[in-house]
Amino acid sequence: MKARFLPSFDGHPLASEIQWERHNLFMEEVGSRMVGSVIVACIVGLMFYRSASTTNLVVWFSGVTFVALNSWFLIRRYFQMKRRSIPINNLGHLRRWHWINLYLSVIWGLFWSLTPALFFPDASQIQILSLLLLVVVASSMPSVTMGCYPDIYVTFLTPVFWSFSWQLLSVDFGGEILPLVIAPLTWCLLVAFSVIIHRTHMEAIVLRLEHRHAEKMADQRNEAKTRFIAVASHDLRQPVQAARLYAESMLANRDQRDDETTGKLVRSLTSASELLDRLLDISKMDAGVINVMPEVFDIFPVLDQLAAVHTVHADEKNIDLKLINQHLFTRADQSMVMEILDNIVANAIRYTDAGQVLIAVEKHPTELTVTIADTGRGIPSDLLQDVFEEFVQVGKQDQESAQGMGLGLPIVKRLCQLNGLTYELSSEDGKGTVFTLHLPKIDKTLTPVRSGPVENPVSPCRILLVDDEEQITDALSTILVADGHDVWVCHTQKDVEKLLESDRFAPDILVTDDRLTDGLQSDDVIHLVTSHYPEIPTLVITGNTSSERIRELELSGRSVLFKPVGREQIKQQLERLLR
Image 1 (cartoon, helix red, strand yellow):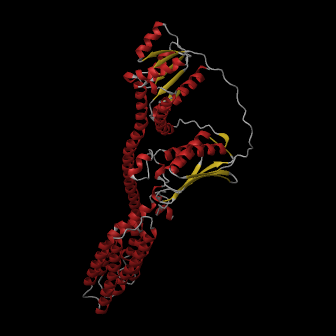
Image 2: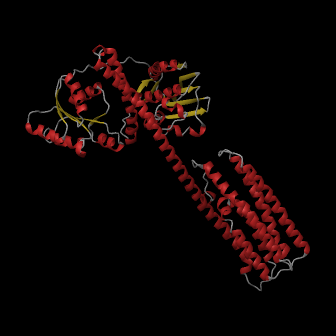
Image 3: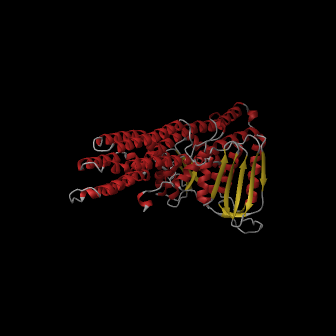
């Protein structure tokens, strides 16, 4: 019954803020409410000035003074304390003031319950009904009190109206029943009204706070995206700038055209490609087109490789990277588990200035846990959940350019969801962070891996390449021709139509960009080519990162590669299609 009529918001994500908002609204009205009550009490005393005895009037105004001083002292105390900064999660403060307000409600209720005993014996029926009307009006005015804390309101109402009900039974109303039942009936209606007001009031508070929180999150995301664009452009500009300088130096000086400079050029472009791949990962996860391929694997080589890769970065910062490893088997998508742990270790090293980063795997009865603990800067408790949102970083503004784009943990969160894995993140600001990944345990012994049959390379073939960017077609055709393929290039759909109508070229495979000129897409080119060659294999290469378009391409069943792609990726995909 209580849950139905007085719903609790304890499980709401903004539970603490809801409680504070309710408390603040209540306390904002409490001062004016107490002043109004004192004024009404004085009016009541003046109403019965001629009919009541001096003793009763002294008792009444002494009661007014007592409750008024109590209220003034406590309200003054509250506003003195309000100047202090009290944490929003300090609900003990709210509970204390709730009990204080209950105390005020009790003494005011008991005070007003004296009214019939003091004034009814010598009062006329007109005075009695006027007083009852005045009390009903005064009791129904504090709507915030009704809405915020019905228990405080009912605590005040009960002694007042039941005292009136009892005293009215001894008054002669000439056989009329209505004056006798008006007090208990009014109590019932006011209680019911307070419950209704409470539900409406609390829903309004929740909606207001949710709207405020949504606006705050939107502002934070906009700020984070602005920072992200700055960081991403910086991180992308660096390797592209390096690649351009390497290329220009090779053009200007033949002596620079050696394996070392070429290797540096490739590494710079690979670095830029990896940054774009990370953006694409988010888009593909949003589109729901990431294929999870679970397999049983040994965690030992995964962690060993992880430690080997990051030891170099740890040594650069004079951080001790410690690995506690053992041969244990689990079942998940191995590449995704590797990416999850890689992101966490990279973050641990990035945000640790001194001390160590520990990677440890432990065996439990039903699971394995991989723990990555650092002695770094830590994360404030109020940001522990926010760090798993896109573009959120917890570093200082002047450090962000060296901290990445804030996409590592969002990728971790989504990869864990895709694999059905759970994780825990605990941290203490300034003292470090501990991340624990839970993996299923598989009972398996080490077995030698048998190598599969070696496939014969694909023979050179005829490739129709369609892309509206001449630089792209030139670079792609250079790679494909170097592998022995015969490549014909078209930049528009009209070029494709002319080529197909001329019968000069019968392609074995179609490679096309997804977004072409005049608003055309790969679908248009594929439809045109397959009308002449229905069984032709098709490869779509695209730089489109729209989650909707990515989903459409995946659902089409076509082979898709996302720019930027390397020679090996293209080669492997062509071999797979041609086989």
